[in-house]
Length: 575
Image (cartoon, rainbow, N blue to C red; front, side, top):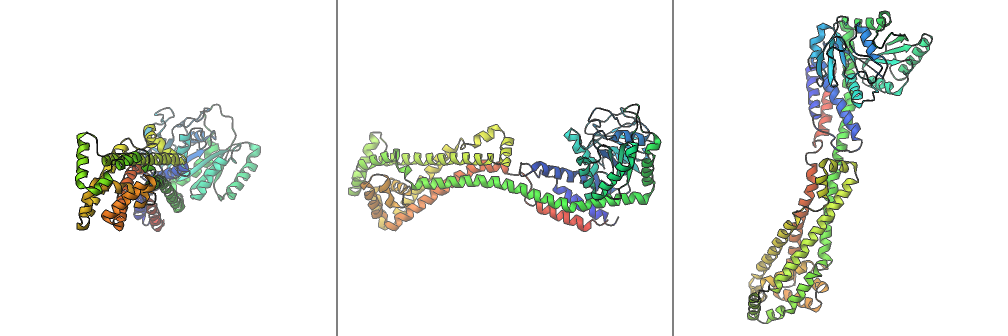
C-alpha cells in the first residue's frame, strides 16, 4: 500500500486532537456530539490505525444484528462447537467472543486491535467466560487461518453499554456479517446500521435466518429489493431456513451453514479477495473521515461558542453592575442619609466660614475637638461617605452575582456547569464573595487617600498655596469627594443633593481656592480613579464565574487543527 506510513502519521496526528474532553458541557446536543467523538476515536483506535500497521493481518468479520436474531447460534455452527453462549434470556451476549484459528491467536490476543478490551482466552463457552468489558478469544481448529468471527452484542439491546459496544465492534470490522430474521428484516434499527455500512463502504454480507420454506423466495426477493433501494445492491445474501432445534445450545446442521462457511473460507485463502475486502472497508472508513471530521470540528466550535456565551453572560452581568455603580454616583443617593447628616454637622460647626476668616481659628477648633475626644466633622463626613460607597459596591456586586447565576441557570450549559461545580460553590456564587466588604473598604480608603494627594498636588502651586492652606487639605478633599457624587457630574451639583445654600458656599470656596477649570479636572480625576478601583473589584467578583470556565472544553485551535488533520489524511489517503 503506497504511502501507508505517511497516512498512518496523518491519522495519528488526527487522533491526538481527539484526546481532549471536547464536549464537557450541555451545549446543543452534547450527547450526540460525544457519541460522534467516541465513534471517531473508536474507529481510529480499533480499526484504522491497527489495520494500517498490519495490512496483511487476519480479516475480522463481526457478526452483528438485532436481539434474538441467532448470532451466537450462527457463530457456534460455523465454529463447529459451542464457543459462545446462546439463550432465551436477553441480553445474552454480555461480553463479545472472538473465534479464530489457533494460528492467528497471537494477533488477536495482542492489544493492537480493540485495545480498550481486556483479553480472556478459552475455547468452549463457559471456559474462560468473558465478563463485561472483556474480549474472549476462542481458538478453534475449524476456523481457517486468516479469518476471525466476532460475536457482538445486540445492536438494539436494552442495555446501553451493549448497544454502544456493538457499534464499536462493527466499526472495527473488516467485514460485517449482518444477521436478521424473516420476521424482522424490515425493522428500522438494522437498516440504520446497514445504511451506515453503505456510507462507509464497509464490506458486508447479510444472513437471513429463520425463513419458512414457503416464504423463502418472496422474503429473499423483498430483502434484495430493500438492499438495492438503500444503495447496497450486490450484497451477498444467505438464507437460513427455519428449523426446530432441540435446545438453545444446539447448532444448525452443517449443510445449512455450508454456503456461508464456504464463502468465508474462500475469502481467507484468497489473498487477492481478502485484500479487496480490506481495501474496500479501509478506503470507505478513510473516505468517511472527510465528512465526519469537519462535522466534529463544527461541533467543537459550537461547544466553544457555548462556553464563550457563559463567559459573556458573566461579563455582561458585571458590566451592568458597573453601570449601576455609575448611576449611583450620579443620582445623589450617596449624598443622603448619614452623609447628609454629617454634612450638616460639618457646615453647622462654622468650619467653612471660620476657615475663610482665620487659620488660627481653624486650628483652635480642631484642637478643641481633639481634646473633647470628638472626631473632626470633616473626618466624620469622610467616614460616612466611605461607608456609603462601600454599601453601593456591595449592592451592585450582589445584584451582578444574582443576575449571572439566574442567566446561567436559564441555559442547559450553565445549569450543567453549576451542577458539576457542586451545591456549595453554586450557592456562594449567587452572592458577592464573603471578603468583598473588606476589599471594598481598602479600595475606598485608598481612593480617599488619592483624592487628598490630588488636593495636595493642586494646592502646592504658589498661586493656590495660601488659599488651600487657609482651609486645609482634609476639608478640601471631602468637598472634592462630594463633588464626585453630584447629579450633574460637576461641582455645581453639590447643592442639589446636600444642603441648599451652603452648597453654593462650598462651590465658591473650591473655585476661589483652585479655579473653576481645576475643580472640574480634580473632580473628573477623582471620579475616574474611583471607577477604576470599583471596576477592579467587580472584575475579581466576575472571575469567580469565569474561573469555572478556565481550561474547560476544547482548546482554541482544536477545530482548525481537526480540519488541517483531515486535509492531511485526504492528501495522503490514496490506497
